[in-house]
Amino acid sequence: QKEVEQDPGPLSVPEGAIVSLNCTYSNSAFQYFMWYRQYSRKGPELLMYTYSSGNKEDGRFTAQVDKSSKYISLFIRDSQPSDSATYLCAMSVVRLQGAQKLVFGQGTRLTINP
Amino acid sequence: KAGVTQTPRYLIKTRGQQVTLSCSPISGHRSVSWYQQTPGQGLQFLFEYFSETQRNKGNFPGRFSGRQFSNSRSEMNVSTLELGDSALYLCASSPDPGSNTGELFFGEGSRLTVL
Image 1 (cartoon, helix red, strand yellow):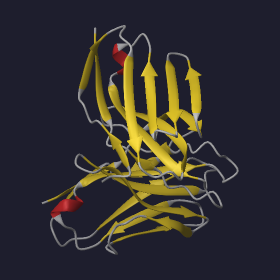
Image 2 (cartoon, one colour):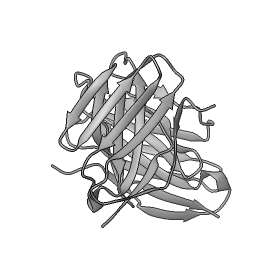
Image 3 (spheres, rainbow over the protein chains, first blue to last red):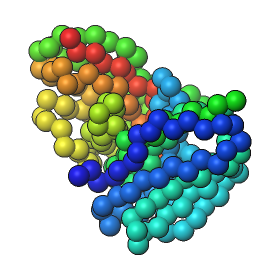
Image 4 (cartoon, chains in turn brown, green):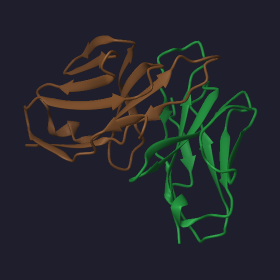
């Protein structure tokens, strides 16, 4: 079993719809939770970052973390064709000396249809 | 400010050969990480360097190695290539450890095809 599970999709929705993307994880030591967006032929870029449990909102994007259920979500409101991309969840443990090691989900391929 | 630069962008090798990939981080970033991305396994952590020292390593065989130079530029090497090494190799840099956002700045990757 992978440490982080994410439905690879693909997911296709009409423009303006609310999109819900989810990941589950098994390592209770994870405390940093991130969502990255990757356009075709590009590297991933950080979209949202959350430390521990709770919600975080940034414009049309909302990230939720439920550590008790080991479940994180990303909601996209008023989805736009430009949101079409692969969305990757990523997690890491509390870092010592700044060492970085992210564990990624498989990525969900999202298409927003005009 | 220039982003993370990876070279070459595309390359084709045959089994048994070796390959060296290069990464120039964002100016001022001292941490460089490498990830392998494949359709089946997704993004998997290879290793991370800071101040020319490897601080963390993923679960890859010893054929995968890397190094970082004093100017923070990094290279990774894969020896005795196997078909399964075909992947997109992504380099990411991040600011000094004082930043706790966990944000990695990725390059566009080097796509390796092994025939």
